[in-house]
Length: 201
Image: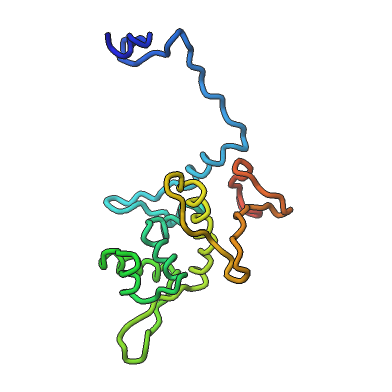
């Protein structure tokens, strides 16, 4: 007796396993209109096809997609993380991350081209350069903290992190990040959606 027969489940003419005990599968109930934001994101983030190349999100009508087009690979954000720690030189990035030099060189160039890092002369006549965060790059601190807090809460079931994020001024742990509306109300996970900007079609 096979597994399907043993548990009372039948196989139809197309080879699909049927629900046990005469149960009938009900169609999914459509979500309320305000829960359509995930679908809207996917539609707005329609990629620009580039044959033989990595998907280009430059013109995607979605802030998430455009952000991923710049910092979507893990090495880029880890380089930014190290830059916040004070790492500036190529060899320092290489040593702290253990990344292959050709990949590091490509990622640093991308971050410079995107205006997240800028190149400064290290020392007169040294022939070396430093990679320094720009104002645009420094605004990524919110992204890093959000990722840290999410990873701390939701990716640490087996091995807890030995460190947490602290306020360098007060020495106290950072509060959990919250998203708020213009009226100051905390916006929940199912209470936001994309919409046209005022004055746009």
